[in-house]
Length: 96
Image (cartoon, rainbow, N blue to C red):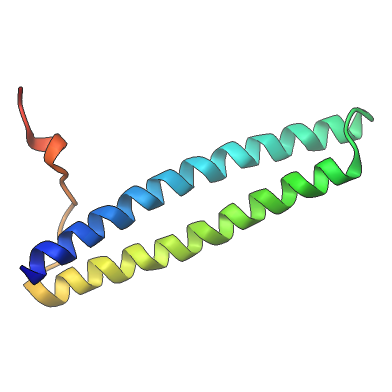
């Protein structure tokens, strides 16, 4: 039971990491867009600072979630004695 809980925790953290990585990518593009608009005089400084803050907050969440994922995988390794090559979800292995 503990192994299953550890595995599902690792899956949850992996999903969170994938989501925050996509968010960081989107916010980086938005920040670059606002930077260009600011240089052309089309955006206010507050818009630039707001987009920069959102981007940096997402980067901080990415680091935090990355650490949580590493901890979850380490916990799984401690229970099983091996490090998993990959994490497989139910949908990855089902053939309909």
